[in-house]
Image 1 (cartoon, helix red, strand yellow):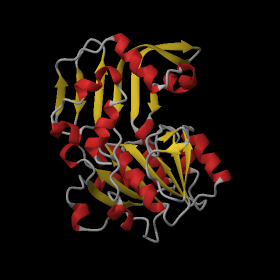
Image 2: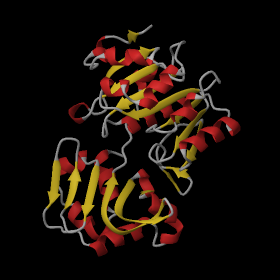
Image 3: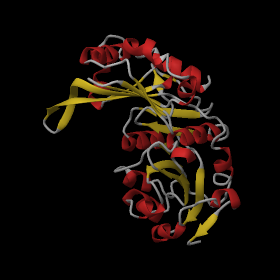
Length: 318
């Protein structure tokens, strides 16, 4: 399905606004990546380089509540956990995130009431986007694992998804899909193509998912998105016959050098390749690829501009 059709599919998930959203200019529909709803304000459609305001719309609290009910097939109880987490995966792989007033019991958010904002992220698959990156990493005999680094909206998840799809053509792959964005499982069925030999641990925490995958599924590769505090569990995979393909939020290599998860994973020997993705006009582009043996070498990698296109690898600390 092309991006324009995915946009129109996504608009059907927002019944109060469907008609207005289908009148946006064709260039917006073709590139749309998010639909933003905020109470008392117009609906906005975001593209990587443009923002379209639907000026004849004004989202009301009742309309946002109607959208949430539609997301849940009018059974809020069945989606209790997703509502508390503020995110839900929808048919077609689209992803809704929402905010409002937190209901707190003890130290945990148990629900969200008075929804005031919805961000519908439009699903997008770009098959083949990871082919070059995979050819320069996974087939290297010395590769232990790969870190995809990039700012928000740099296509890290899109790249990770395609990498997993390509991997699973020849290796047992486990995807720990805590946020439901890689495979986008809807009622037990992945909405995105993740290949034939790929197991998905949907909505498991990364720590629990990693332990279950190793114990039950004997994966050759483990794929995780947006690694944070669970980096210690991932670092423990070093030397256990499992290779890691991970993404971490870092806007540049200087930020990576200060990121605790990045440094710990490299120093533990759990990963030794880093790829930096561009954003904005360079979204989805690999700006640099390095083999890094020690975390103190990351800061010397530079910006990565044109390195990926000119050379297969820049070796740092080798």
